Length: 310
Image 1 (cartoon, rainbow, N blue to C red):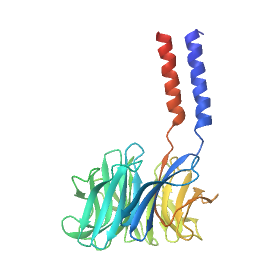
Image 2: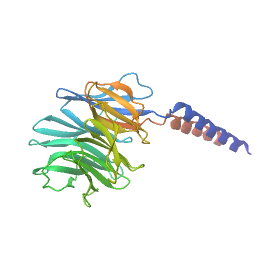
Image 3: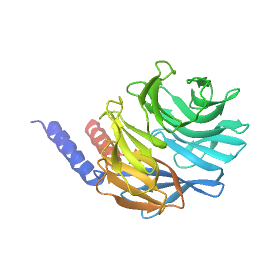
Image 4: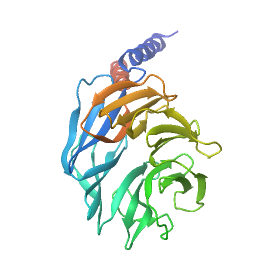
């Protein structure tokens, strides 16, 4: 083995060891939306390093409805300040550069927001107005441009949540709290997946396992994404308001209305553990912690190559 090969192997081994030490097996970043009165706030919490919440966005007018974060882009959230207006805002993940992406008036409300990061789309649902008021789901570009209504404008009940399966190109919609529908990204191919649901507040998809987790007030349930079986209870006896599935699908985070804690549990409902607390958790999204070890190893490899070439 040459000296160069031996050193390269040593660097590689060191990187693997460093990644194991520096990057814990379960280190997630939580973006938590909470509301007090008519003001919304977003805080950040790292499950491995944080001892308290870090405020990213504070004193935003309106009751927060939902939040969705692009791990390599911006965060988006829906807020409903009055009975006469509703918004989707966006900001950098550190809370800077807050922008209004969608602005609606006339008694409309936006109940949820979802990202299709693969194709660069934003979906929002509720009672929407484009240009006439009706219930449904609208797709736009990430900056709010090029709106496209993907649902039937004759719907007479709201869509309470929307989620996107980017890998399959499907949009899931909780229609009137009781029916799960899905369609293609442009609204075509609409089909009914599940019926007789109980007040669905949130949808969280796990495409790798073909499962969807639902908040069916006051329970968290799980069902096949194809609707081939009825939902089964994962958690009961609490009052979950928001839900997010950690990358990898093994861990579920949820905000509980009874005590205002954010909890973590295994995907089968075991190991329920309190993580942090906010005033009234109403929105939640989770992204993986940045790969500090990978950055360190890249720097180490760069320094080695630079030395070898001099």
